[in-house]
Image (tube, rainbow over all chains, first blue to last red):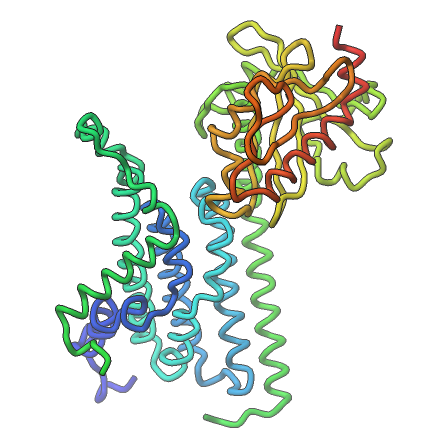
Length: 216
Length: 233
């Protein structure tokens, strides 16, 4: 970067890369990507948090690496190269979880491995990292990961709270004592279809507040 | 986009693969001790669970040493094989060998209620992947003291229910032998009669996993038949 075209690290354009994906260009609710894992790992908050963090790390680092190499990656094998980068990152994350967060890694089981096929990641690499400089690519990766993560965490919060009456494993409803009034956990919240419905509700709320997002 | 020669593409891929391979090899080597320790702790915890002792990550090693004090390895005739550490026997590898060469680990535990318990490992194929667990027997070597099962990738909400306490607790008190004949425990679709000493309820919606579990119990425990019969009375 020459000094003439140098822009501040957190210029408005760069900040937008991050904030847009939390809201009006959210990968899950607006682009409707990465739904599969959003359904699978959101029964409890803890695995959802770990999943969100794992995806963000994989996405940010892969974006950074692919963007740094973008002028050297032969066009004809670019998808293979992207996949190799993603797969390497995912295996590293998976191995680290197995070593230092064994219980969570057992709960997430195959879904850590399946981050490789998460369409958000391939999508950001192909659409953004291949055409942009490393710094914006890193921000974009963190933004997309956070956008995915925030939906996961919202969904997991409601499913754990309503389905099991706990938050992060802490039995909050039992402590308040609502069970003695005849309250019962809604077992349906634990089943995968309810994740889809919660995501649907989030999409509904978001579109009713931001009418630009409504498709014609 | 620049046009790259084939030669460039080959060199690029080669270098990429070498870098990635060495990175992954390095990570696997560095993280291996921590991972193996986690597996050892998980194994000890599930063995303790089969005798009704709930442990945490931190006290499992200590509790294991307190309750599960003896272990040995048998062959199919029920004779003790010397110089093999029961804890390190990998059941999956043993099951690939012919029956007469298999090592059958036995653990003896002494829980607080004064019972002398024998813990036997079991492993088999579920619907999507391996299922495994531990069956502990009372000193009559017939009545089940407790069981614990787990799985790698059975269907959540259906087959995956085998590792819930609700399912596992049904096995307690069931018997493996009827009139000195090995009959194992059946997992019955539609529910078992509570007076049935050899049957438990299957998991609704998890028929294949339930059947696989029944097969696992009978296959694995039958190998201990000689030992159990000889030492029963």
